[in-house]
Amino acid sequence: MRIDHHWLSEASHVPSPNVDDRADPDDISLLVIHCISLPPGEFGNNCIEQLFCNQLNPDAHPYFKEIHQLTVSSHLVIKRSGEIVQYVPFDKRAWHAGQSSYDGREQCNDFSIGIELEGTETVAYAEAQYLELAAIVKTLLNTYPKLTAERIAGHSDIAPGRKTDPGESFDWRKFYCLLA
Image 1: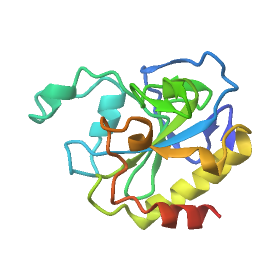
Image 2: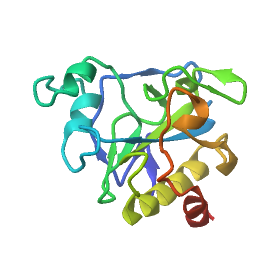
Image 3: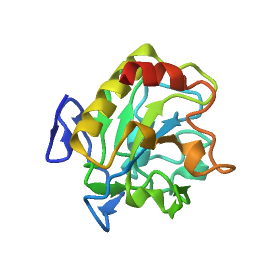
Image 4: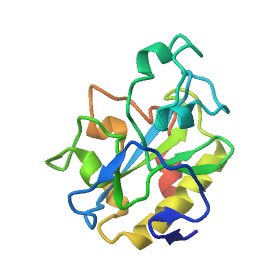
């Protein structure tokens, strides 16, 4: 894998409008792993892309009435098939962490890269997702010098009590073995 101008070359590129400049583009020092499924528990559709691009139809599903006005994004989504979609270049701030704190610093969006896994906190992630995640993280660690294997967190770690993803279904041990 390689990164060209802060875009992962192996990913499909779908620019999200939910992005802005980082205060310090060189301060990429945290990787946050999330999970997402829309509607909850459903996979393999284009609803995540619609949400991240502000095109989610509130009438398409009852749950969408609650969330269609959210302005959120992530740098990457890894679908269950292993397909990778990038919404925000790594040198820009994606809107994935919300109110958050890590290592004494608030507002994790300012200094983090967000990766969403298509899934839920309780359904096992696909093997293809682990393989792609490990390959991507290795590439990110080699590209952004402030990122380290020790500075990888789940959304639940940076927003405890508010978020639970990637959840009990994410096998951290397996992920770190693939990363080694």
